[in-house]
Image (tube, rainbow, N blue to C red):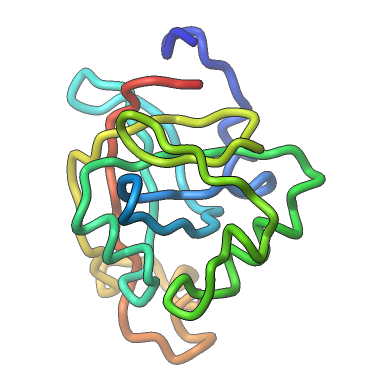
Length: 161
């Protein structure tokens, strides 16, 4: 698919439909469910903006690899996405538990069941500063006593399949 032809619902794509962020390559990858993100243009490139907590196992893979995919699924996979969002790849094979089939790409990994996959190259990572957040945003970090804010990951969309 031509990236410029991609059409979606930007205010529900992540928040309501969820997605899987997969970072890494064939023998070294991990995935997690994401619901915070966006798409747009930065530095004259089509990009995705993703938010990952440093405590998540997938964060280590995002740090280590430039290859990232963001994949979307039909509603029937909601339970599978819940597993990717609530369990850790440190403790189990989430793909097997969720019933999803990894699909190795030239530049990353996605899943056979995905309806759309954005193949991306990581451009930037930056830890967000909670001190700069508006008061109403702090509620998302007080629920579990978490000290660390999310990290902003910006990745160039190089292909859509």
